[in-house]
Image 1 (cartoon, rainbow, N blue to C red):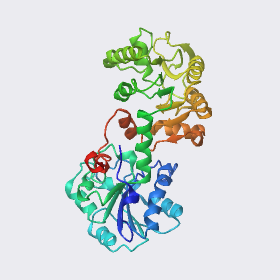
Image 2 (image 1 turned 90 degrees about the vertical axis):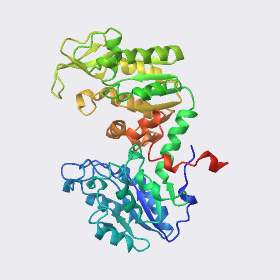
Image 3 (image 1 turned 180 degrees about the horizontal axis):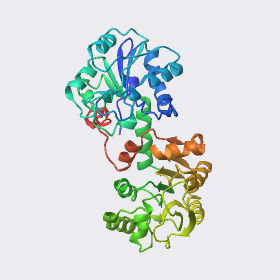
Image 4 (image 1 turned 135 degrees about the horizontal axis):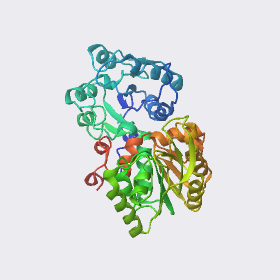
Length: 402
């Protein structure tokens, strides 16, 4: 898949609209607790500024549901951007109101304008054509550098692209890197290739698992989703999280893995607790005999050893989803040990965004990973083999390449 390149656009002295993903976590005081997504956009922004462009940045933050909610203002993002870019960043009063449109129209070269939270506009999540048109009217060029939201058909990601021809739109450096990395991973990995798939539910990862089976050599299952597979095997899983309506799907995945010669690993022991709480009573039990009323909340030490052994010879690792309830220290050990092992390996290691990115950062091994995606949902849809709504309009069509 080839994307429209930013470097092929004639940007000099023009106005550029860059859709970024500044949906960053905040602490209780409204301070940014992780600015990775902001830092990831700096290369594209600086490239445009170096070509004497006026730059209009746009992003969402949280889920204000079409209303102006002060705690979701992008003011903290504007301050952090100012520090990183080492230049003034003006925060617009709104998104497509008259005052903001006027500031955008008069924005001088080398200046940066950040629009307020796009999701203050109800039309953003509805891919509204009128909102798309107004956003497009602000600039000569459109650049999408927001991989984390490119699986959404929203006005600033999808609708806006209809108002720019192929000479006036492109993928930013971050978006291009993400799409290319996952493309190479799925189509031409160095083998053996292993996928570690965790998280709470099979339903959220079902299509990704089905799509991964013909491509990988080994799959390691962890997190709450493991119990649907274990129950299907006839194990006594107590009160652990299970999706009874997906038991047959779980069987189908295990059957397909066997048929394809893919080694399919499930937990052999778990850390079980009498309730879902940090102060719960917990003990290590085999996966077959979780006590009645107890629930498995992390993989056990024997599973960690088994998974390490299985991962020993792999050359490429894709990790999407934690091995347990890593937010609670008591049930974070399994995820933490796997994270350290993967980080220390000589394999190419790719972390699929979301909770897994948060996990490896908490453990302090984020710098040891080969690649950490900025988008959990978007990376999952790429793994499912889907074309993202925000990426499709930026693809070079085969007929154009010929």
